[in-house]
Length: 388
Ligand SMILES: *[C@@H]1O[C@H](CO)[C@@H](O)[C@H](O)[C@H]1NC(C)=O
Ligand SMILES: *[C@@H]1O[C@H](CO)[C@@H](O)[C@H](O)[C@H]1NC(C)=O
Ligand SMILES: *[C@@H]1O[C@H](CO)[C@@H](O)[C@H](O)[C@H]1NC(C)=O
Ligand SMILES: *[C@@H]1O[C@H](CO)[C@@H](O)[C@H](O)[C@H]1NC(C)=O
Ligand SMILES: *[C@@H]1O[C@H](CO)[C@@H](O)[C@H](O)[C@H]1NC(C)=O
Ligand SMILES: *[C@@H]1O[C@H](CO)[C@@H](O)[C@H](O)[C@H]1NC(C)=O
Ligand SMILES: *[C@@H]1O[C@H](CO)[C@@H](O)[C@H](O)[C@H]1NC(C)=O
Ligand SMILES: *[C@@H]1O[C@H](CO)[C@@H](O)[C@H](O)[C@H]1NC(C)=O
Picture (tube, protein in one colour):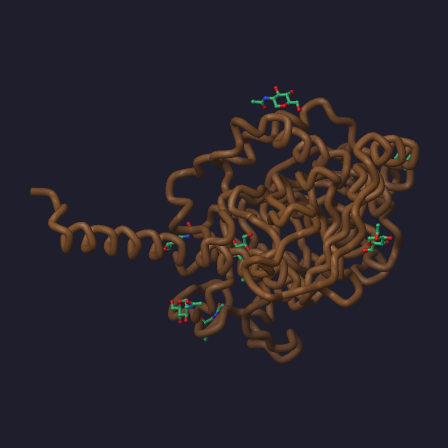
């Protein structure tokens, strides 16, 4: 079925052009639309590794664009024939995500100024927030492991975790915290509200193995059927697990978000992706209010009650195959919805109050806007256009 659809579509639109020679000779560099124009996708999907690419075959992303600086394993952006939908694979964990997304956004091969970005990957789930095969739409991404760590065997006897924030003296406090600028990113929740109704009618994929494992938790929502839900995602290169570390990082999520964020899922890329995007936004290359973070739950971040953590981690939770399916089942209505309602998305979706301040922890976008306003005021002043 998948292939039949792809083939029929390719026949309909005419066969896609082969990949261009990579080039980086400046502004005039173009994608392979053949008419000297940059490709201006309406929606761009990020997968983090090959199994998450549930897109290229199913929606006929047959046009390849080679972008210098992408992962050597995944050197091509894949677009549909119209150039409206594109996708790439970043490679896993923070360094791959940061390098790939920076190379893409600064490549000059595309015009991303109106593009919506959908990050769609699998992740571990907090059983107190969701269950396997569920799909999360995020507000915050928090770089939880950007912290000090002492092995728990060597920590003071009254500590609950070996992790504490840099610059502080113990877990649970922000006093004198040292900030690098990538600790927390907030996304446009009005955009999330706008696309959420499109997921109301969907049936998420599931398996009996996932159902059986879920039942061993014996509490909600871990034992409930998969659903679409809201929460926040942690980013860490270390694939952490177990209730103790999960609770420590949930506490750190809460600290970085002043108690407004709830640790729901754990993954390895999002903050790196977002830092690259903040930089591209500052360079006028994209709009960071047009980003959706969707994560489907492949496994649980901790064991069921009364089970040892490491054996539970190594056991199959049954959530992985349906989570991959659900990236498409939940992600594609968002992709298609934005395209079919382009007139109401083209100009952007106004974000929630205070978003500009919190988009990144250093308030970079807000400061840039204030600086631009100040410059334009003083220019007007110099030209004698200031208010009389
Ligand atoms: C496009 O690139 C993918 C790998 O990124 C490859 O599998 C596929 O064959 C390429 N398609 C064309 C038309 O070159
Ligand atoms: C642990 O004990 C020390 C020394 O009594 C105290 O200063 C500190 O606040 C305590 N820390 C925690 C996390 O309870
Ligand atoms: C973010 O802010 C902290 C101080 O709060 C500063 O030390 C750091 O250099 C800033 N980072 C960036 C990228 O601006
Ligand atoms: C990670 O991204 C989230 C938002 O997605 C943000 O809240 C968090 O501050 C980021 N953390 C780091 C360390 O970049
Ligand atoms: C889940 O997806 C698989 C693979 O496409 C399919 O074979 C299976 O029938 C689906 N199950 C449900 C319950 O939709
Ligand atoms: C998380 O914070 C709560 C409330 O301060 C505390 O009781 C708990 O021990 C902390 N958990 C960890 C693992 O640090
Ligand atoms: C948390 O509080 C600080 C200090 O008031 C503020 O600058 C920051 O924007 C707040 N962060 C969030 C995510 O609300
Ligand atoms: C958007 O498009 C979908 C079909 O893709 C449609 O059902 C929906 O009503 C449209 N309008 C809005 C505002 O979402």
